[in-house]
Amino acid sequence: MRTQGIIGAVIMAIGGMCPLLRIPIIGNWNYFDLDQTLAITFYVLVLVGLLGAFTQKAGLIRFAGWAAIALVAITLVGVYFKVNGSFGFLHFKKLVNLAAGMVKYKWGWCVILAGAFILITVRKPKVVVVSAAVPAQAVI
Image (cartoon, rainbow, N blue to C red; front, side, top):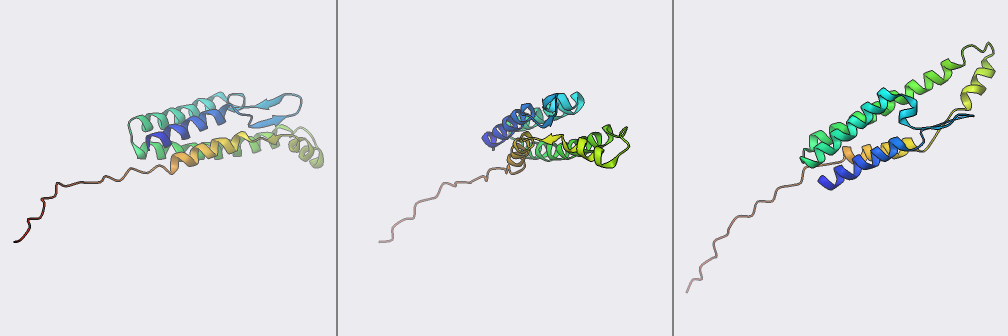
């Protein structure tokens, strides 16, 4: 449980630094380039996952994974509406669609979701109780 939580949180942290969007002329954007508030919230969730891993709290680790998935979904919806709304000054719908189609989603989202999936699959280890057995006496 501890190792799985640490690996998932580290993969999520690496995914936040990977390119998430490709914007023409500007280049690749990661979470901090998208929005600093979302990036700070994302890395707080990474820290919550690490904290849960070190304290061996499976519920806290799973919470961090589910919250990260929700944050990624909110970010993707926000990016979609921001991209389509940014070209609202253009009066031709085909030109708006062309300009919005230039913004491409990159592979960093998959890395983040892979780390979150690792976090939500954490389970508590089963406790095995070993009792001291009394040896059977031989009957003569």
